[in-house]
Amino acid sequence: MTQTKIFGHQNPDTDTITSAIVAADIESKLGNDVKSYRLGEVNPETQYALDEFGVSSPEYLETLEAGTPVILVDHNEFQQSAENIESAEIVKVFDHHRISNFHTEGPLYYRAEPVGCTATILKKVYEENSLEISREMAGLMLSAIISDTLLFKSPTTTKEDEAAAEALQKIADVDIESFGLAMLKAGASTSDKSAEELITGDAKSFDMGGSTTRIAQVNVVDVDEVFERKAELEEAIRAQIESEGYGLFVLVVTDIINSNSKILALGENSSSIEKAFDVALDENSAVLEGVVSRKKQVVPQITKALS
Amino acid sequence: MTQTKIFGHQNPDTDTITSAIVAADIESKLGNDVKSYRLGEVNPETQYALDEFGVSSPEYLETLEAGTPVILVDHNEFQQSAENIESAEIVKVFDHHRISNFHTEGPLYYRAEPVGCTATILKKVYEENSLEISREMAGLMLSAIISDTLLFKSPTTTKEDEAAAEALQKIADVDIESFGLAMLKAGASTSDKSAEELITGDAKSFDMGGSTTRIAQVNVVDVDEVFERKAELEEAIRAQIESEGYGLFVLVVTDIINSNSKILALGENSSSIEKAFDVALDENSAVLEGVVSRKKQVVPQITKALS
Image (tube, rainbow over all chains, first blue to last red; front, side):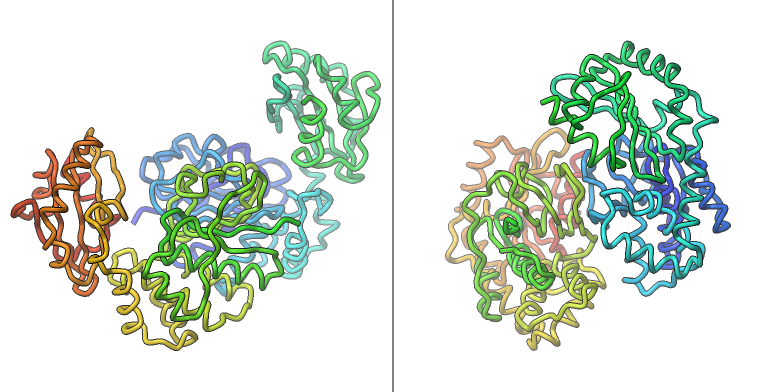
């Protein structure tokens, strides 16, 4: 039988990379011939987690041949997946997102739960199958939960994520707070990134009130380090607004230590920001107290202000 | 909070009706406010199972208001679901089919496994949550497994379905063989059905080689009882071919006791049947030894012959 390929989404984050590795461990223990892959570069935060637990990064997926059996982790929407995904045979999915732009020809195993992280689901799968969790796999799952929930500060965090992390910490034998902060900091350096990289690295477009709003997010430990380059960032943002026709561009710089965000908002709809968050923009910028989740604390608010 | 509505597909069968009832039992035990519904009439086989275990049929779902939280069982494709399903909030799905024409706005709980029956998955959910299975619920799950697998004779049957039925039998305290056969027989009477009902009751269309093939299936204990009405059936089939433009119409009459099917094939593509099954049609009819599953033993074979 053909080996089954396991991978997460494009622009991989810590949950996507570690869930591919962990799902491969589960499937191997269940007697299935599988191998984990990645669809892009491993980011510094994920590399820190892999190094801490002595686990190698998955191989880069060069091509996906038609008919190959695959297991998707941490995503299901085809446009976020491997280029050739429609011609593959999707046999399993482990995910924690909405289901959209996804379909199969035959029955499959699909496991989604509305929790903060795919790893929280995978931990249950170990238990349901009475499989042992090694220190390495516990460490990777813990890293994914810390990453996706920003150390439990994101409103996407559920009690299940917290309980899973608590149990995994004991096996992984690390201190959640100190390890978690060090891992998040490893991924939060901005000094080595260009203004272009900062505004495109994690950016998504949304249709709002007849025009497109672009929202980029950067997680940092030093907000000032980013805003020292305000002029350079504004220039890059203005260039994107001009070339792409965005009605609004919001750069959300999230302070992962203090759980706030400072934003930079440009475009003809920028006044909607003042309505959305009840703040005054000062030279295109404002601090949003307690805001860390784009999905739950930024997108719905601007959508409402623009509607 | 609004009560969550649980239901299966249109033209409900035993797995769809009982899984709605069983899922409601699980959710209630987990502390959730839910109620089971049905999207159509309860068929005689299902009624036999409900009567055996003293459980009432779910209420008919009259309307589904926008925004209502719902749990889908035994299906996911919107065209098989409630009329208004796109405007509801799908919070969970328990299913054993492919995923197609399905999407949600937000994250959800989705549990699909490639097994023969939804009840086999629900039994696992009881166990994973350490919930007790009553005699009534065990009986309904056992009935669903017997129905979907035709007493383990369908090639869709997995080892998991067999193991689940074995365990459920002990709780339900019935003999699988005698109860199962009685239940299947209760649904297999054809004398009270018109020719029109026999060829439309469980019929599906498939695009094959540029034209539409219609395949209807009827489960019976007495094949001759159906073929005594061959002239009447052929007339009804020819009328459908004419009005709908089918290239081929196949009525599959499945003998649930001996696990064979006798077919009646009409239409300009009827010679493809001889190629598909390596049989000679005798007055539009042939016996297909060992064939009981339309999905696995009829559709692929005719598709190939017509391609």
